[in-house]
Image (tube, rainbow, N blue to C red; front, side, top):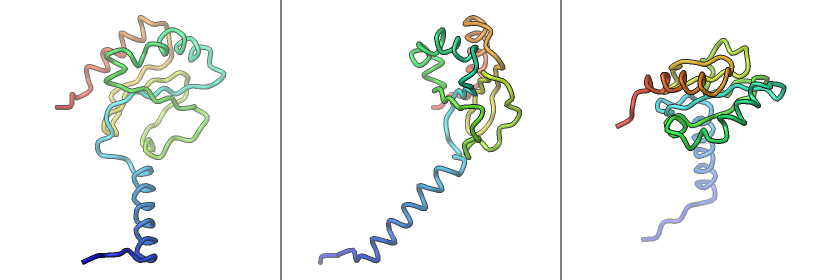
Length: 130
């Protein structure tokens, strides 16, 4: 027995798929995974220094693998999935998040040693996935 999908059924299917993808993009996920958010500005010289000193190797480090980097312009509205974050005023501000919870933040960039030391401590607080 052969089943065919009518035009109206296809339209309905695409409608529901569209709604699903739209909702999944705006609703907070219950298992988003840990990441490092970097709030930056194009006028921030400390952000540029971080990019040159740390950003070029970040994704190759253990911390970078555990905490993928997501850069966000501080002048832009927060993405809907981060509606719960508050108090972001200075650039750069680095925030470690996991499962829609803030683990900790680093405000400013005072050099590589300072950054890696604080980030390593924050990374230790991230629950490991089995």
